[in-house]
Image (tube, rainbow, N blue to C red; front, side, top):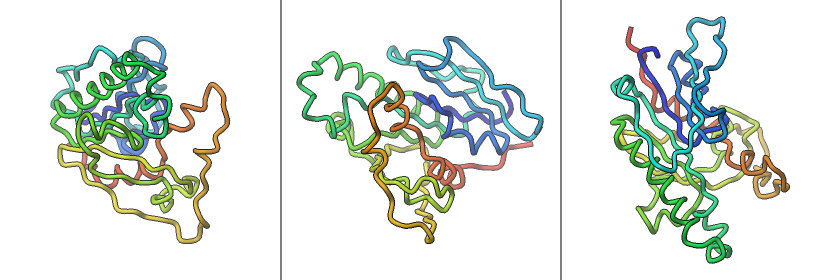
Length: 220
């Protein structure tokens, strides 16, 4: 690991950490869909680029930041699964049962515990969900199309809530004025094995906006 590290929990794509890695930060991304154990992305020829470590792990039982990097953490993001929490699926709540709800809350709790223990700026992302009742109301919400000035591809709607702390700075909207109205591709996504990953992937425009608002120069 280098001098500064970003951590992203429940993160398969690594979109959230990409802007940080491009600027020399190292990243640790954890998700049950990664290969079991630890793998590292291949080294880039650009020596100014940070490295990415992928940890394949089930965070159901909790997780702690390794002591060796605790003082180097610059930012933490978390995307706990929303399958059993999103208000959009409320009509199926009773059929899912208490165990499904218990597991979903436990995963969200892991995210909150790691974020708060880091001492760094952090954000926990979820759609409009029942966590507002079980824990606290979100601090912010956004839609991907609000950050098309960073990434025009993200001209779509998806209301997303953020629970933040540690001095997190919410980026201001930065929209591309040349684009038309945003579409609703997320709501129209067809069924299939990758539907969940497609719907939950972090929009790159928002990821870049968060980096711009929350990064600090890496110490020499």
